[in-house]
Length: 147
Image (cartoon, rainbow, N blue to C red; front, side, top):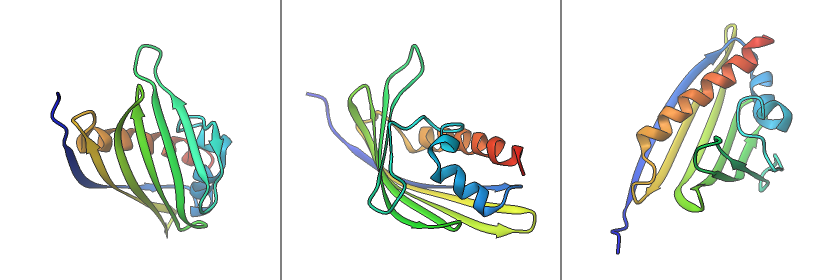
């Protein structure tokens, strides 16, 4: 039997976008806008207690299942959600994520904080942080395009 273990970790990623907090918040809150930089959701209920669910992956890679529940939403200021991530049906992590949007001169400072429990070596804090950096760069391309 394989040894089971959990590694806990926290990372913070910051970005400054040329777009307003309203536009950045909209990119998270609208399923059409979100699908431009994140996976297309099959379920999208952007309200406290609401759920976001997507399932997919690269053609030759694993199928990832993202299943989130929104815990707190403060329009144009804060998004907090908890989520599980599965890879080919195996639970690889459970996380809480906080997105803070701060109006700054010329745009928005976004602070993304994730606290996760990573299971049995299927995922790591470093891999998740790397993926989050890529994701937030894509978000920036979308929101800054119309800024």
